[in-house]
Length: 200
Image 1 (cartoon, rainbow, N blue to C red):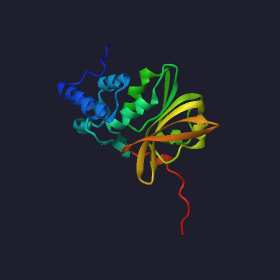
Image 2: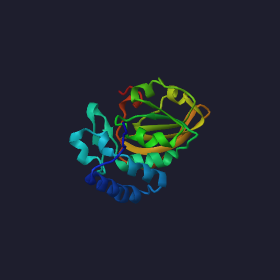
Image 3: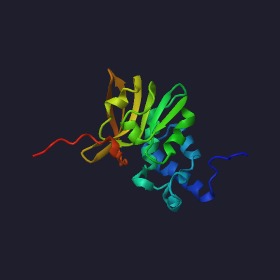
Image 4: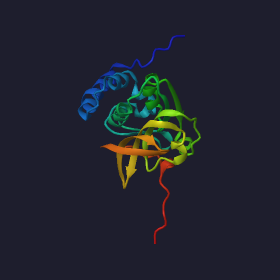
């Protein structure tokens, strides 16, 4: 049996081209490998059938179980900032759609995928050179950082005081040093919420 990947109908193909021209390029997302992968992978396959018509809109799409498919600009910028390499051992914390995994898989040497609960608990492998978190976190737990190789690259959404940004960084001295690079609306991953302190 031959499986033909990502052969969409004409309507979705048109929407995909419009996504690249009017959302990605206008947001500064021009890396050829990003445009190629996002032009190849059918976003409509990663949302409930009833929401397939919204797959290419410039907004997050609700999935089952309270999860979300982030907007094209968010995932395109994350992929661009990740700068994946075929030498990478990558870990993806999946936001619930599987779309980012499909984008990333052929661009790295190996890819492990964990759900947010497993990622927050550090229930993953070790020695990763690239961590991509498909969602916004308030914190990256030490147990997860400890699974990364020294100097591992990190791309994640970062939530601070109700504002979400894409942040990039590296592991240094066993800790994650993150730098916000773009303010965008990114679905939150509640498993990565910071502990709430007492208030009086």
